Amino acid sequence: MRQRPLSLIQDDLVDYETAMDRMAGLVGERQRDERPDTLWLLSHPPVYTVGRRTPEQHLPDPSRGIPVVSTGRGGQLTYHGPGQLVGYLIVKLDEGEGIVDYVREVELRLVEALDALGLPAERRDTPPGSELLTGVWTSRTGRKIISIGMRQSRGVTSHGFALNVDGDLTPWNWAVPCGMPDVRMTSLAGESVPAAMDEVRAAVAKAFEAA
Image (cartoon, rainbow, N blue to C red):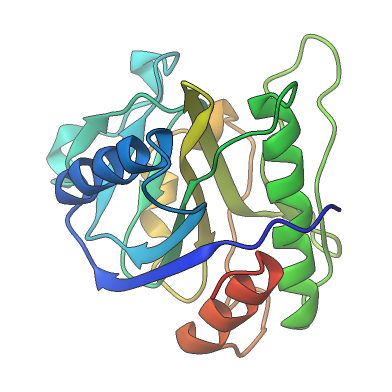
């Protein structure tokens, strides 16, 4: 992979709508070259986010009490909650570089971070005609541990990834994650990898050359 150092912003728990407002501001700054390429690490209170192609039948029962928010990113339904590390990537793409190219780089960097934490993982290519297999899976159990959904606007990326560290995975079972009814979601804790959130943040930041 090419070198692509990022500026690092870190927060703890940030409301999703508040985060979207701030992310839009960061994207605007990057489009005007007022800030460098940036990785923003944070977590959200419980919320489901849905992409533009998410079918209604994939949504959770409203009685579960977790809000569902439409978002402009790629991908389908994702759950966010405490114990999950979210990374938003505000990066200006090179001439001729597309969002799919950058998502592949993001997957590989996250595989590197998980490997440093002691969890072998892999990205997957999507067979023709199948639901997109964007994200990262564990090599041993074949479960999905990282969801990725991104977009680009005027050459700058936004949104990013969600890495399950040690939070409650039950809400994933109340909806259809990532457009794949048979997907099995997992976390570092679920794979018996004893990594604290600060350790995970450090490994991810290093993999993205973020400081």
